[in-house]
Amino acid sequence: MRVLLIAGGWSDERAVSLSGARGIADALGALGHETVWFDPAGRLTELADAARDADFAFLNLHGAPGEDGLIQAMLDRVGCPYQGSGPAGSFLALHKAAAKALFENAGLRTPAWEFLTAPPPLEWEPAVGYPLYVKPNLGGSSVGMGRAEDRARLEATMTVAFRHGHEVLVEEALSGEEVTVSVLGGEALPPILIRPKRCDFFDYASKYEQGGAEELCPAPIPDELTAETGRMALEAHRVLGLEGYSRSDFLVVDGVPYLLEVNTLPGMTPTSLLPQSAAAAGMDFPALVARLIELGMQDRG
Image (cartoon, rainbow, N blue to C red; front, side, top):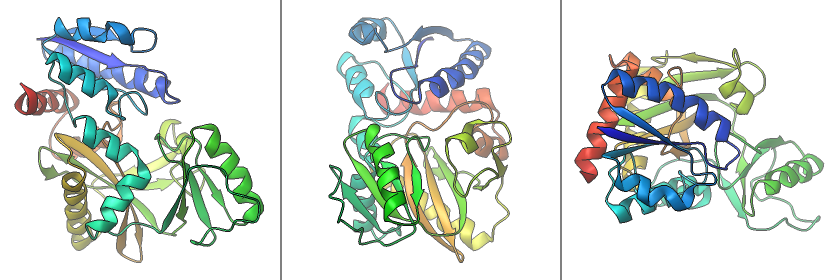
């Protein structure tokens, strides 16, 4: 097949996107596909024509465009199949406040939170209390995220977060262990236990710098916890209307998992979390890429 490999874009996660795409290109070549690179940055108006000439589009974008559903909507309009979720599910997952509202409506545990659409007045105090995390509402890879122990630190972290967008999520800072569970083709893959080495949460450096975190897969956690996080990941996937695959991140507090967020275009370097889980399930990286293409063709072929 002629595969349009879409990577890069203009979000803060551009470099991560391009890095992962190189491994995907190698896998596509090993599978016998022809790869055509496409970077939406500066070429968005050419996407429709490029997609019409392709048999399939493989997206490796992080943040917007990509996780916001824009590229998927354009591909839908020209009838080019692609892996993963469509425009609506992609945007709901990227919009942290909307996703958490749907999680709560479905009875899925998630840390207490508040949604801010503008910097609050100096006298404002969060109802969730301290300590807390401040996150840009749109985006991923923990870009712009910070922890606040008091009002002064909160002001500083909100200033940083608002530089990355007009919406910010303030979230209760629970203390526990981080676990991530990937969903592939309607099944939960083996979970991964994440232990950051450089700070108290899985920030950008922990995710992408060598030695930033210890990632144990399959996670050495009780069978009951594996089953519960798997159930919650599958339910979150369903609640958001996702397709093909996703990755749900959890914080486990005294054995109880809290759902943090769901990623619709998880990292795809060969050592990223989703490929690690797939490997634990007996699927090497080219086989994972092949499975994602198969699922995308089933959904949109």
